Length: 338
Image 1 (spheres, rainbow, N blue to C red):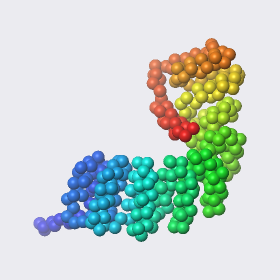
Image 2 (cartoon, rainbow, N blue to C red):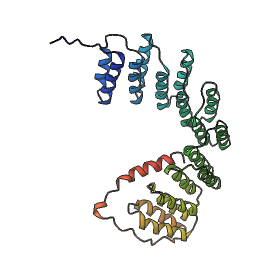
Image 3 (cartoon, helix red, strand yellow):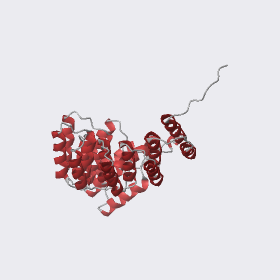
Image 4 (tube, rainbow, N blue to C red):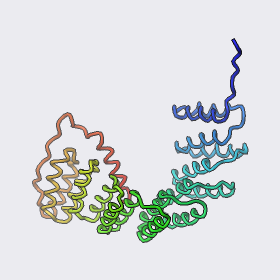
């Protein structure tokens, strides 16, 4: 039988072995494979390690491997820097993220559009719309911004309450032959809702439909909560029906919040309509929250003092359905800045 000779593994193979250990949750084994490499690893191997520790939120280890990379004269690439920048943004360390961009310039590594988008995401999270606008300016000298770039800037402007800057950014986006997408329209609707410009929020929604952009559940949730924020029961109730007809789960507590709007507006007809809707469609309603609204109503004249009671759900459905939690999460995501 001929002798079988072992074939030495190259960096690509080592990178895949390390990645496989990480996928299995074997962090120590993955690092041990790295340490046992017979020759200096290249950027492919270091990128696997740095990416893993960034995703795990262990920036100290990610930075340590980056420093080891530099000490071994392994040239970082755009992916390396972008991954580290993402780690700083995840850690809400915007100064660290900005320093990575400076390091890229010093290393003469050209940032990609994804690199800039990561930093724009950081500015959006901090509502630093002026910084986002400035970065967009400098970005255009290097790469062409995409829809994600503009949406991050628009969202930062909305978060800062500067709707004029948001609308100018939309115009700028269109001048680059980029069409507003579902995220663009949803962010604008959120901005108009938060600034209590409900007519403009609905006008944006109509503009969206006219542009053949299909609204998703976040768009509809955002418009519904704009109605609640602006105390418009009629349009809010209509949006509730639109969400149902679109077969999207209704965010938890929406019924209660619409009922609160009716009470705040002292509308007995609307309140009774909403209460009847609750009885028919939401057997898992938060009774304590419902009692709170009824008590509020009592202090305002008491037209809900004797509401009909929701029937108890059947035993087989005693627990909330599986999609209730996800609907709540989606609703909370939409409402996180309201």
